[in-house]
Image (cartoon, rainbow over all chains, first blue to last red):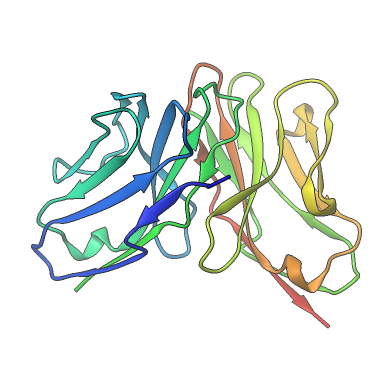
Length: 115
Length: 113
């Protein structure tokens, strides 16, 4: 079956522009996660949804970052007034129910470059 | 707070040789532990995971890992590497009652002929 998909795969933005990154989780998966992966680093947690409820947003680096999942399936990560330090790969993952021993299935990521 | 240390940034191994990638974790209780592999331009793929039971865990692609509570370690091993194993490997932990993965900084594996 289809895995997690993300779009766009690559995004170049000028500093100060707003961007929106989309994640389509595996159908039926309750939980959805966003991670940020800087160059040469491991992924770092940004935020977590269970269905449409955002249960943890402790990893969002600033109030310029906003995520939503209004119908409990597709999610969008929005970054306002992008800065150069926002350049990274943004990974989305989903899991069937969000239990902590469950496998999280990752998408290919969106590589964001802010000039 | 939970954390993961992968002390080796880059490892080079000859094709056919054995491999061990190190992972140490910090967590107050028994954590759930994962190894993921990331090939260039690809998402993270789960190799194996441990959450209870037998401390030696078998995974995909011939990989295995051993959980050692006394050493707070979860090292990844493979008896004979193939050129296609060249990738970045990440160890990760989830604490009980938590959902988010905490990753190490990764180990880049290079395979030489």
